[in-house]
Image 1 (cartoon, protein in one colour):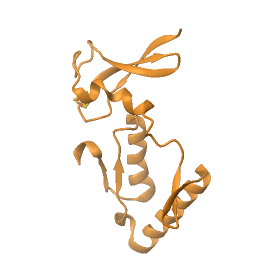
Image 2 (tube, rainbow, N blue to C red):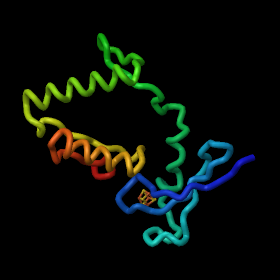
Image 3 (tube, helix red, strand yellow):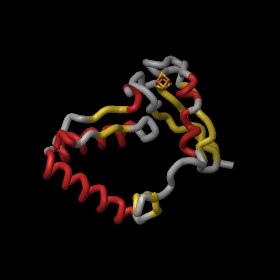
Image 4 (cartoon, rainbow, N blue to C red):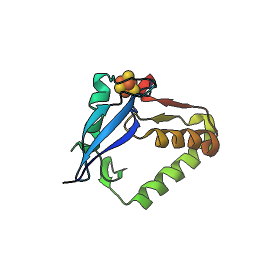
Length: 135
Ligand code: SF4
């Protein structure tokens, strides 16, 4: 049996509470607060206590989907990324970068949200980026 904890930051809101994800045999099974964290000081709200649940949720998407003939169909990552890139390029070319808005998610890591911010500003050229914690 391999048990360990991974020190990270709750991604659900801007407070940035410290959490320890409990990992048993490679599977995330729980969340603990970090007593020494300067922001949360050992406390978490109910969202933070349960943040590990979406990682293993059976409802989580595990493959890219693309709408074809009005229905979402599983496709390869290459096909999904090509479709997204070509459609974003078309919108920017026809309507300008501010015709695009990026809505980031609390269900990805803070580092991935940072990359989305860079993508919006440096690649698309828009400041239209927001996060579901503010919506
Ligand atoms: S534990 Fe609650 S207050 Fe702390 S960052 Fe997560 S959602 Fe925000």
